[in-house]
Length: 489
Image 1 (cartoon, rainbow, N blue to C red):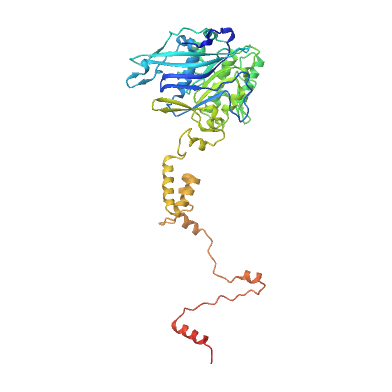
Image 2: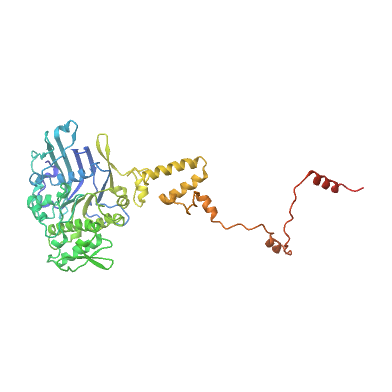
């Protein structure tokens, strides 16, 4: 663990913390990458509607590209001084090849940390953590040879706003009422690491809202917490007064306890409640909670969320807590479309390992189809593969001049699988084409009649005489007509 040139700054002048850059070497799928992250600037104005969010970085990539590894690297590097005593034993973090651990079994993560303070003094340090891999198995250990930096004392104050960092993994879940899992976990881990343990372990549970908010004896702070809740949530609002020891949620005029909500609501409310719990314990009395500064790491932020929420959850979070730095991952085109290119980093697999690139084009306001078929996701079509192949075959036949296939192609584009349904059921033993079925529904044609309307418009008396029937021509009739046309002498 090493620090940069500003290491000599005392702990008294350092308080909130942001990560402006993360560098990873030989961690899982990553050979070597460096990523610049968005972070709130000192005295920056709050995010405006429709503009880039200064406090959000979104990592987008396929499964196995390294998004979760980057989140873990940020947590490890930011908490480097306390990781050896955190209660966490790293496993399978160092990159391995078919010949064993890469780079002599050494992996590392280095975070550029920016500290700020109430007296407007600021400083940046580089915090590095190294992991040493075993040659025989997947167990690893932290390298302690770098020494402890001067700012490390900030991490040992549990209830302090300094170095505030929380993280949530994709397997996050809320602890059931009366469960002892949370209490056991808090006893086994360092309190600072407990806040990010969900990024590393699947068994980590979140603190339920009913376990702390009803017992909160500060009415002003309780009101702040509920206000932030209702700013982030959309069509669900938390009821101010608890009933039977728990808070209720109002939706469409009906009130529900937390355990009666759907999985999507519980997934979102669960980690937001846990985040606000840690904020309220860290921020001193009298401070405004929405001004809290620090770092929030969330893996699969769109987990269990309906598309309606996916389109709005990130902007709502960023504006409700503008001084928090959010580093998120997602697979949702709707989440991507709610941000600007400045907020997005593309994580992909390369020949030599993970590659991270800036967003190639603007995505804000694009439709889900446009984003899915862009460079961000790389899909050639959003249709089901077998149906897409059928559409391509029909299009090929239409280009050869088959008018029926051209009509079928248009129906398939507009109706999908419903295009194969016949407009009317075929008669017994005969399979009718859509065209013949359409003709069958036309009204019967009437016998040809004189154009009575045209006579009336011309001012002539309508005629009811039928058209004279023309007899077939014969040689004898033609000769007779010729004789009548000759002039008489």
